[in-house]
Image (cartoon, rainbow, N blue to C red):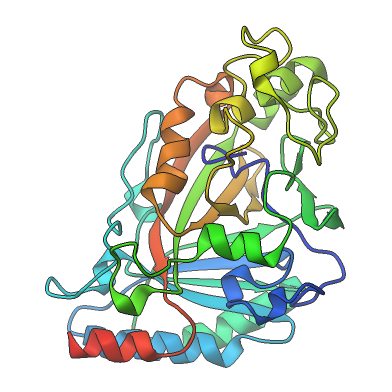
Length: 343
């Protein structure tokens, strides 16, 4: 579901272990492949008191680099606390604010560093996570989250999966590597530090879904709340691979004005400039939902713009954001480390 509930547009993976035919395997780990690998663990760390920031960043970078490749795609993202007060940090990076309806648990939110580890199997993720945490034993784990992507498949260049509300996700993401890069990667001329060019803003939202409450509604009512059929087809019959024309339904007779997809992207010719790559989580029968994850070159024009549009959507009563944070994924290589050390 867009920014509020993991996009209903996040992407999946099938037989692409760590890449794709259109060249996405050459992309940085967080954008690699037509879709993310189907298992994930996110670990938020706080840099221990007394530790040198530069040493902590270098150690985390080396630990992640050591596990990335093959059956694992892993990356490091930096929270606001990773930077000293004098550092030239990304201009939009801050602690994630509490939006309308959020109940953020401080224990499950924010962090100085984010280790995002994905893999082709739960075992691969577990082993990579254990290796990484052993290398970073001096840092403090703030929160962790495990995720999976059920029913992963690829159609028309987009990875699809099923979320806990029984809807197919993935239709709204770009279908080519070039489009993914365009939406998700910082470019020169954006007013960002030169070291940040080639990186991405990452937003994580831990969103609890009221699945029992949701399942009491009819499928027809659920589809009107989302604004799509469960299989992704638009309510006016338009195929999922094409753009719905909401202007032809100005009063919301077919697609309600407060439907999730209509609020998230009211003009389908101008999709939100972000790439969603989320996972489902299941901690207990009454604690399951989405690990919403999205990447963008501009946090304000991407996630935040969508999040503000979603206020008042019909789906709000079924969702509760309890954690997550804002982070920045550095560009590939280690030039960014040298730049920050020089600061």
